Image (cartoon, rainbow, N blue to C red; front, side, top):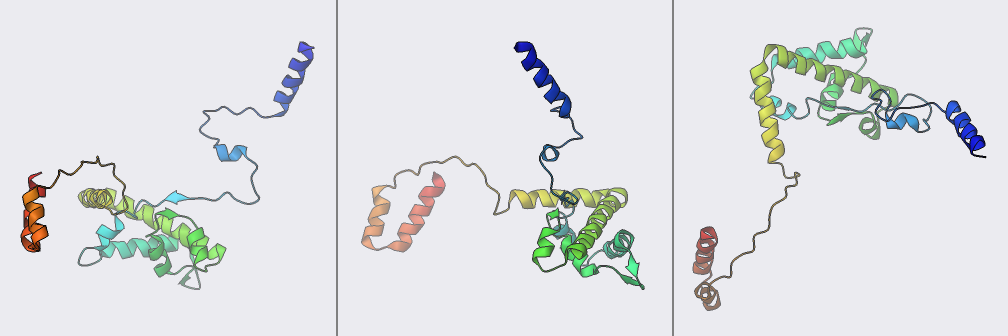
Length: 196
């Protein structure tokens, strides 16, 4: 009976492919049943964090337009001497935190056109990073440092802060409030809190 169960489990094991748990070539999504078509590609935009600092300068760098134009034409090509995508759309896609087609499709772009725009934006972002690494490494370091400061001081970042209970306000300060001398009360309370 035990030999039959072992033979049955061995036959099932031979029919199913073996996948190592730590195989880096196979993602866990591939083990699930896939839908038709190509899998969705989402990549992180490396220039989305440095772009605000880069464009905050008094004048937009000339090399940025050169990279935008050349990379867009290289990535998606042209038809009858006109680029297959708008440079304005590619420039706007550079602000996205991730390169994916869904946000563009929600704005009304056709699927194929949004794929072209994202393809061009990926190529442009790669070109910007490579240009800064090769020609202006100090500028890239400064822009990255500015981006880190911006992220750390952002309104949306969550920090764990310890709660510190406030000390009891002395009676002489509360008496100023009861008397209606709100200016003196506010000033005394502020000084008391600062000393804390």
